[in-house]
Each structure stands twice: as C-alpha cells, then as structure tokens.
Image (cartoon, rainbow, N blue to C red; front, side):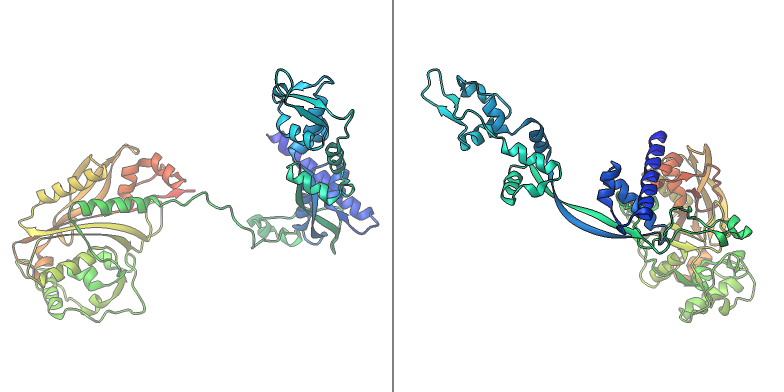
Length: 506
C-alpha cells in the first residue's frame, strides 16, 4: 500500500516537472492538458491533478478550462474494431455449401449479425431446403465498413467518418459522444520551475522563533466543502432522555413546564427552605444576572410566610434565626436545579382543592463550576415529585426501584444524606459493571414541612421527590464500551463520578 502511494506520488511529481519544463521551453505560449497526457503516456486525470496542485501554490500558472466533445468506442465497439462486425462474422461463418439456420443461431453474434447481413444482402435464407431452413452466401466477398469506421475513430480520425454513419454507430451502442474537459495552461505572474513547499499550519514554534515571517503559507480555501456525513445520529443523551420521559409517562407522571432558565433566588432557594447564607448561593456556585438583576413579582402573602419560617420559625420548626432579606430573594439567577420548577408547581397545587399529583421534568440547569473531567457549567437534571397523603420513605424507595428497573438498572443502594429541603434524605447508588464500583446516580428525600406548609398544602400531605443528572444514569445504563460506540469517541477510563458528567476524549 505504501509503495503504491509512493509510486503514485513520484509519478505526479514527474508530470508536474514535465509541465513546468514544457511551459518554460515552449514557444506556443501554452499547453493543452489532454495533449500533454497523450505525449507523456499518462492518464489525463494525472495532468489535471498536477494543474490543480500548481494553482493552489499561487500565481505559478494560469489555467483556463475548456470543454470539447469527442467520440469514444463502447466496450462492444472496441471488440468489433478488433474482431469485426457481427454481420461480417456471420457471413464468414457460413461455408460455401450453406449452413443450417438452427446451427447459425447457436452463435452469440447470430441475432444481430443475421439481420444486418440480410439487410446488406450478403446472405439469403432458403426456407424450402430439405431438413430445415438453410442460409447461403449471396456475394463472394464483403467489405466490413463498420469495423473500418470504428478503427478510424479509435485512432482519433473521427473526422473521416460522416455524421450519418456516426449516428448509426451510436444507435447500435458501438459509439458514445462524450464531453472532455481540458485545461489550457500558460505561465502565471509568479512562474517558476522550482516549487517551494507551502506551509499549511502555523505552529507555536514558528511564532516563538519568528521563522513564520520567511515562510510561504498555503491560502485557506473558504469555499471548500467538508466531507458530508453518511447520516445523522441522535445524541445518546437525547435518546436516553426520550426513554426517561417514556418511563415517567408509563408510571402516570405529568411533565412540568421547564422553559424558564432564569429564576429568582426566591423560587430557586428561599421557597425550598434553603437559608440565604448557604454556600450554594455564593457567586462561586451560582450564575447571577446583571440585567435584569432583580425580580419584581411575587405572591406577597406566601413570601411573608417564607420570610417568617426562615427568620422566626413556625409550623413546629424554630427556623434559621437570621434576618431574612427580600433583596437577596429578588436576585435573578440561572436556575441551579429544576426543583425551583417543582416549588412553583406545588405552590400552584396548594391554591386549589388538593388532589394527589405526580410530576416530572427533564431539562438543563446551570452551576458556576470549575470545568474538569467530571464537571460542566451546564447539565441536565431529571426530577420526579409525588404529592399525596401519608407518603413515607418506603414509598420513595419503592418508586425509585421501579423507576430504575424500567431503565434497566437493577443493582441499587440507598445511603442517608442531608439536604436543606428534605428530611429524611437519601443518596441513590448503582453498581457500574464497567468501572466495577458503586456510583452515585441521584439524590432523594421527603420535602420538609417548613417548605410545604407555607405554600398552603394540607398538614397530612407528604411530598417525596428525587433528582438525578441525565448524564450519570446514561453511563450506568450503557456502560463504557457502548458509550464509545454510541458517541464515536474514546471515553476516558480514569473517570471519577464526583460530578454530573464524564469527559469524552476525542
């Protein structure tokens, strides 16, 4: 393979050198690419390739594309130019005493040759002959004009054949009229027989040494088309997202609207009983907006109840005992979790006669993370919320088991955890067959009364909820090898699942 490529490259260089030398020594002022190919005994495309290569190097040559039509023999025409026409071969296959038609028709050329020879009156058919129809010669010799005309065209002397004969040969599919694109090549303003290689990349070393100043760079072709992909593919995360959504719908959940990426700190934090001095509300963890920096519309009676439970306590809780600030609650942010959407939906539910509900959402959230192998500033969160009377931690574990089993994840563990707005809380782990270890896939818990009762929900109502990153269960479900196949990249096996995503190395 390599020797063939090297041979091809040497041949191309020879064509390029010959083209430049002939331009330098020529008196006609230019060269025709087809004539040069015939002179050098190479394929015309090799000469075209040399012309285009020289054009890419600047003003070394000028090339004008020209089109012309010429006649070419078909594969059958080439055979006839060598062996003779079908009608002539039929004639010569008949002995002086004649030949039975049944014997003649066994020849491959008989079908066309017989009818043409009959039309030319070279042969005759005797149907009354004893033993069956016989074919006899009518003339002593024939002139194979078809063979002669095709040989003339093959030698490049198509002008010696009249248009009527060419048309007849074309009808017989012995001749094709083709369009030939050639180049008329002349010297350019920067003509030279010595070609310097043009650089295609500007490297840091060139910049550091200053050597780029003395180098010639190949012009960037902004009109060049990239390789078209064979087909489109769904991103694996979007495929899994569709599967998650279908599982939720099968379990009777209703999808929550998640089209508000911008939330006030009130709905994102305060409504969830998350204190205003919590580290998650710092600029190092959350993206704050400059314009508009503040939200202005809130349900004021609810806001006052939230303020009270934070600063003074209530509903059986002593609260956080700090001076709650409405200015802090008004700050607009990019939502850090879709639980802000759950808070809005539960508040809306509390404003009407209570009926049990099951909500879910799958959408993007934003964290002011330092980018590394396991963290991005943006990822997808999956959230499920169930509100009903008398729900317990056992109900939450049962729903989570059913949910993950439908996804194909069966090895689960639950570990106690702490969240500001759920009590009790659990982290969910699944065993990863590829990494051979337990990996955290989500968080869950029962919403605190300090969050639910200020909304106006009845005292006996419990709300269980869980949240997971779409990216984590995707890796658990498909595993390392399948993710490689799905994404078409090499997955870094040094992954540590401390964050919502893993790194894909190209």
